Image (cartoon, rainbow, N blue to C red):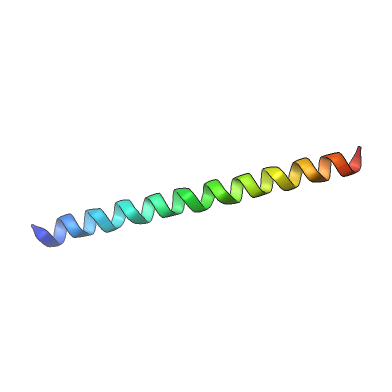
Length: 41
């Protein structure tokens, strides 16, 4: 039982970390797009 709960906890942490990474990458890409868009204007 303990191993299963630890596995679920680790999996949830991994998913949260991946979500955070994607969120940061998305924000950076959006920021870069805005900068590039302003440059081309």
